Length: 383
Ligand SMILES: [Zn+2]
Image (cartoon, rainbow, N blue to C red):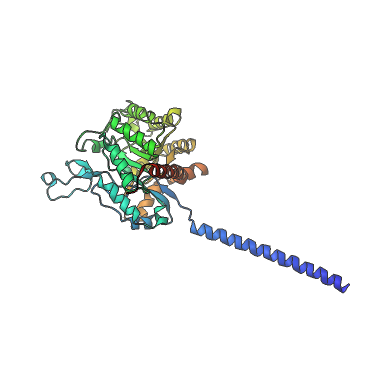
């Protein structure tokens, strides 16, 4: 008997020990999960549109930018501005302009921006580099030789770049200020750039105002047909159309006839965007919703907020959030644009919200990295 009780007791003890081990194991598992969670913060967004430097090639120190990203911005594109504002003494005297609206002097392409961005990126440790996607911008899209510049940058800085852009074809007061030939959507130089982007796997961010400034209400946006034509000529290029084609003075309300106060301001722009999204020949085209100017249109009334959210929910794979900040001084500046969208974030499905804030960025830029590295491996001879 005594032996049997002892046996049972031992069994019970063994069972208890096993149970404790399981509980403890569970605890350890939960702790490990928690730790994993703590080391991979729930980032609010990836920034698909970010300028480290401004129109006079000055900006945020790259290490400072990583601090600003902190545990808020997971990953970010990284580019300067390809255009340099000339300081013409004859025009503004001792006043040193830092923005294109501050002087009549021309802008010119400053190709050195690409070397600057590459060196800034290379100064970071590997785990910080992994959070950034540098982009090539320092080429003149009206120049048949532009593509040679892009290729040269890949050759000189292999392992760095994921794409090209933001570069600009039509932009309100900028296009006409650029020295030399005005860029055009019908220029074969642009086709060469888009072809090469497809060949090398470079993701493209293109700024092209859909319309001229102060266009007549109710007329078809003047650059829309040309833009669609250009996009259709390059079905194998991954293209992000910046700001959904809107600009500082190219408002959504200008492309349609109903502009009475209190009335829906801008069905036409959303229809144009929806048309492109539902067009099977334009499946390679996404839009970024960057720039606080774009956010302001999107949140200009509860009705417009609702319709914008409907559009984003209908095509969750085709929009990317970005700030379009230029050389931000702090994290608050980085977050301000994000929070302008709060009324719309609140109306998105969890799926659409995640994809637009983070998922689409990762899909597009992860694919670009793999393709560009493969192109470099096949085409760049070690120096
Ligand atoms: Zn921009």
